[in-house]
Length: 366
Image (cartoon, rainbow, N blue to C red):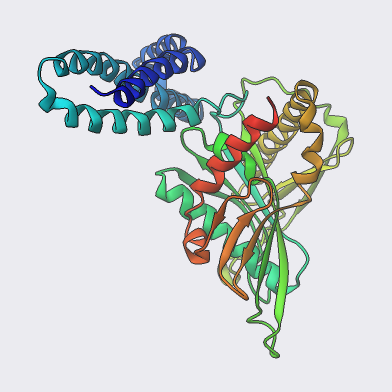
């Protein structure tokens, strides 16, 4: 093999070794085996909610374990091919193709290695609120709800609607969904913040350009086994009538729940179930998740000096601009990641933005 190909082959071996260590591969293998053993128990599905959480944990582990196992085997095969190339130069093109394939697999796994936060493997609770911009902002919030739902479906993640507050003119005032799948929170945590849309308003009779804003808040869907201390006396509980389609299906009871944690000002609400009891339980889970994220952010701020700039890019600030006029483009204000096809992004093709944020965050916190 020529020198360049040999260098690429050696680089792959080194990256595989480093990745195995950084992913804590052996520990993940052991944890996967333990979960599979628990799933084989006869009473595993007696508690559906706990069982689903366990299945989700296994999926997240396998999303890393399976490709890492394949990489280790492929690395050994590459060594054998390299030895054979010394005697048979005709297999060099085969080696080149295999090296290119392994480099792609490594790039993907090295990105997943960045998803090492305490709750990155959890599902994501995502809330979208219309902000400045009048009816356009309500419409924009609904467009974003569709965007994240489309992203989830493209990645075979499940989506559950927890709360939807429609606007009487168009769009929504707010909505909350849970997205569940491997590393859902890890990928989506960077979406926290304000998203800005510039377009010719369909709600303006003069056809003027309108700027509107929607705020996204992302929290991890943490397991009940995770200890989050909340003094119930600090939480204000409000009940209200859930919005619905009207007619015979209108909700005639105050089944919707809003919880406000007064020391932090964090507020969550849920109206997805007809039962107030079920909405209350879900709202408490959402509140625990929100407070857990705040604690994580405090730890991150203590561990990384550059993270003091988080207030400039976190919730309540502009992180991404979406333009439909004068030209079509979407650009992230933090990472500089750019896509020239507005509709493609709105159809859920946001993976590039998510990955760019993870790489940016790794540089900012090192």
